[in-house]
Structures are given as C-alpha cells and as structure tokens.
Image (cartoon, rainbow, N blue to C red; front, side, top):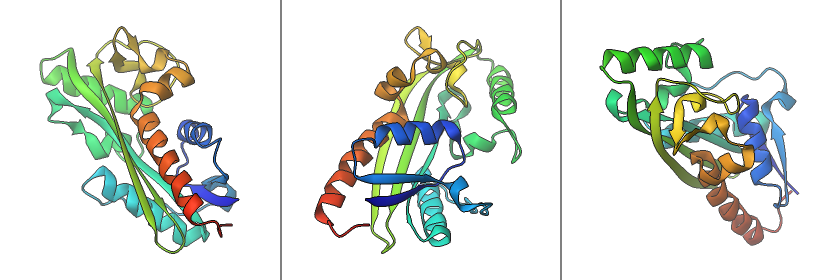
Length: 202
C-alpha cells in the first residue's frame, strides 16, 4: 500500500482527491497528520511550477511520496487574472469572501457583469526517489456577478457552467466536469500504471 501525502490544508480538495483515488492501492494522508508544517514559498510562474514546488517541499518534510496541486481561475475580462494568485487574490490572508469581493470589484472596474472564464488545475505527484507524474485539467464557463449555491468553495458560487454554478452541483456532478476532476482522473490512471510498474512500493 503506497503512502501518499496530500499537500493541501484545503478540506474541499482533500475530499475530492480522496474520492478520486478510492480504487487505487494507496493510503492518502493529509498534511494535518504531520503536525504544524511550514508553508512552501510558491514563487513559480505557472500552475505546474507551483505544484512541483509544493510536492517537492512536502515530500522532503514528510519523507513520503506527495501529491500537490495548483489551481486557479482565469477570467478573460481581467487578462486571465487572478490565475496563479487565485487563492491569495485579495492578499496573503485572504479567504473565499474577500477573494470574491475583489473579483467582483475588478469585474465592475472593467465595466463587466460577466466574462468567459476557466478553472485550471495541474497535479504533480512526486515519489521519494524524485519520480514525477503530472496531469492537467480545465473547465470552461462564465463568471457572473450574481452568486448561486452554497456548495463548493473558492469562486464556485460565481462560476456558471450552463444555467448552474459549480456551487449548485453535487460532488459527483462537480467531479464530472471540474478542472480538478479532469486532472484527478488523468492522475489516477497515471498512478495506477506507475504502481503497477513498481510493485515494490510501500
């Protein structure tokens, strides 16, 4: 059974990842299982670079294989912002509420009430020997200034796919279309093949 640390403190992401890898011969361990670990400096210029930084950082600090993601929202009317700064759009101590408030303010400043947008996700798995797997996912939609739904997290209440927001979908529905769901399905297949080729795993 392969031990894999999930390199996030976001409970929503942990739930999605745990659900996606149910059929694999792995044990997923949240960061909370290792006490109060420091945060890596995410100074990459792309989602892939930041995911790689996190995977390598927590692999080193926990001594276990690690799965990290970097994901965010790209809004066309805002020049694809907030992008890699999605989690801290309103500053380093931002939360969902303040990030969404800034998003709406920026949209209004651009003279828009809605804009084409996309959620993007890059997942990086890094094993203890440095072996790396990478998977990407994308979900296109529209950001609107009217929130709907109480599910999900982040910008989900404002991100419309068809006539519903991501926040109005069940977890199962969300995983079928979401950027992270797409990346997780690809990563699940890559991990399955990797574990099959390396039977001497933990």
